[in-house]
Image 1 (spheres, rainbow, N blue to C red):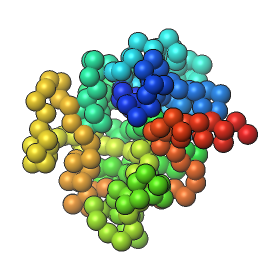
Image 2: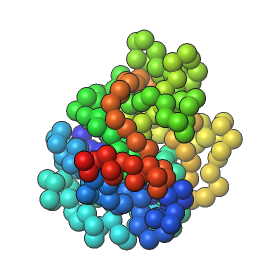
Image 3: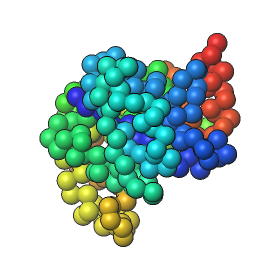
Length: 235
């Protein structure tokens, strides 16, 4: 199975740290955030990882190379000077990930002790997402996890999407129809659009499953969270 690390964002809330360093390359616990992901993915047998880039894209390859030091092959999906958001970035990366087999995707700006070996190699639907307890900055959560593992938009047990999941390329097959219906049709080429409308659309047909990770997880969205995580990992 291949994997995608989403690393194209500007990291506006992390400024001024991200004025000169892309957020996934910021150091925490003695190594860049993205390296934690690379090590875990290599540890479960992933051998090819695609990294999508935009903001300060020229820093990734000098910092990470071709992946050989982790037993990986790294490929870079450059989106241009403006990030294509999660959906557009994933769509563009499919030429490197392949258009047939499921792949793992991880947000480059999160840290977690979740074991990616727990992810299904073949999700029963279009996607399988990891959810965590709601943090202070997202108290209402994102999706509801049912007793049978199905995810829905609304429900009594809303949790926060961890930015970790397995996706089938077919989730993106009719992206334009879904995005048009959501009223967020991209006006640019290549297409720039969020992934969330596609996931919500698939949830309405019961095509998205999930699991609850009760361990450690941090959305490294502010300098304070970065500093707190660094202290925790450096103990």
